[in-house]
Image 1 (cartoon, rainbow, N blue to C red):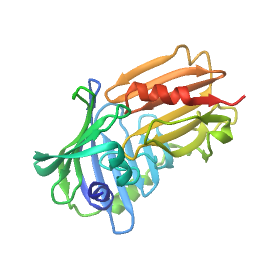
Image 2: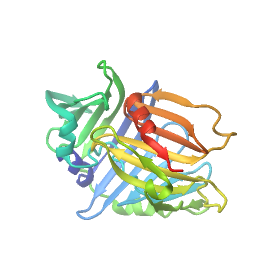
Image 3: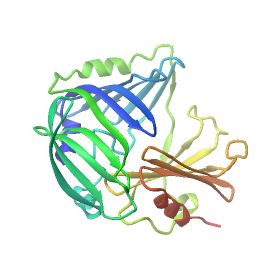
Length: 294
């Protein structure tokens, strides 16, 4: 709870490094809170230039090479350094909390804990929280044999910086010459879209279900994708359902990159993708429980 609160209410900026599946990426992160509202800037330091600006729940992603600005609502999934997506009490039903003592990350003293999965439906996580504020400094997803599948950590961080909300708001207005996309997201349910999910792995509950166009410009004839997100309070699984297209969906897929596992398969005239930071068997159980109403 301290870590989740700190991620929302503390002012901090630093460099975040994410590694997993043989790849490493880094970003400059700044987060400000003025007592009532949140402001955030994330600048990718590797690969395609990209910057993300957030004011509360509005998120704007700028792609300078393509001159495209994507504006959408904040994803309901918690992302580092946020931690919980639900009640902390529910998390402890499925993870055992163990203290691992103290350590240092980015020059800051940290309390280290292990959230050990109580079953095989999810991965364990090892967390480093800054001693004074509780802000998450480092997080690792741990495989069944104890190996680190994926990690996110600040390589340098300053907590308690002066908030600069005007800087974020000004950055969100710099869209001259950009093609602005505002993809429509329509809340719905699996049942309303002709699907049922017989059962979920223990602990997982639906936190979001919506449909959107596969074409972010909103072309009237573009295919529609249905997305449902499930969480045990700590980790997430997403289910995507879209019309089957032979030119795009040529074979079933079972893949793993770092902690993220992905399963893709045809279901009647639809293409189903199930993905999340959970073991492949968990994805298979969810896919098997998904049924298209006739």
